[in-house]
Length: 361
Ligand code: PMP
Image 1 (cartoon, rainbow, N blue to C red):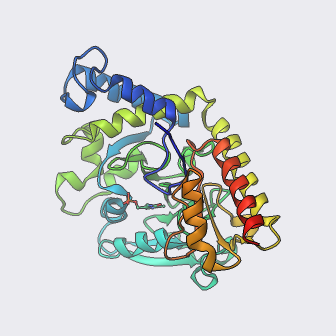
Image 2 (image 1 turned 120 degrees about the vertical axis):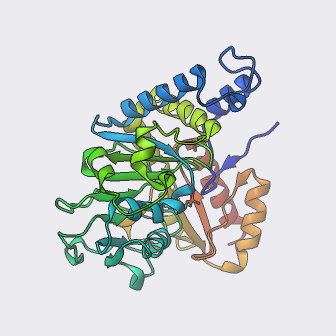
């Protein structure tokens, strides 16, 4: 068996020790004689797992008691629509800060449920920098402010939580959750598809201030109502038990590594190494994002001659470097450096990039 260095944007690399534990326990989990996937979510064993995962995520991210933690389904995309259904009433407006592809999607999917106001965007700059905070047109009466702290495709990231006054701040943290310490109190609602920094796809982790759960006044089925999920400990219907289990293992892994501060140190070192290699390549490789807005999680880069792209991809794959092809919206390459990607993976990538440049100069 040979494992490659995995730079996938998502579903993405998981910690090797988590996968090994899951493998060891696959046929007989926790002495049950069955796989965790084969057990009732209402059984004592699984309920214990669910409670432990919640305790671990609360400790990991220092989540206050007045915030609920939900383990949901539907991907971040479903919650683009479900968040305004729950947080806004008829006739309300919401402010959207659009700094890339996913912020655009969030705003357009929200439009049937709330009056979407684009309070700031950087579309005219090709999403290569963040809009100056002073230019944001925030409405103090808005139901919430939505933003995307890390844009997975464009590789732009907020390095501080924006100040938005008393309006609840909603963050799509799909591609940067738990990559650094998190001050939950700054947010009304945080949500993330699990498939980058938490576990497999098919699971969404949401952290929501409990008072906001009472806002959902419009008629809707229970399954759409976050308050119902909270009241039922995310077991309103059958949850993604396998995803919940792997998320729990990943929370424990992050704690063992030293928690979110250790994740930040590790992620900063990886990103610094790759950006340094790009910036010192005399234009052979290029990252177009403004220095202060560069993402630590997703690093898009182009080659000086795009005709070399297919060769770069072919050779990198042969060298055991997986999934470097950039998103079609921006072209070129992209290396995603989530928590579970080791520094050695970045070292291997940088060595390959330097060797490639020397051979195809
Ligand atoms: N938001 C962000 C920031 C993402 O990176 C992605 C997926 N790459 C999504 C939302 C959409 O997630 P999903 O496919 O789980 O709906």
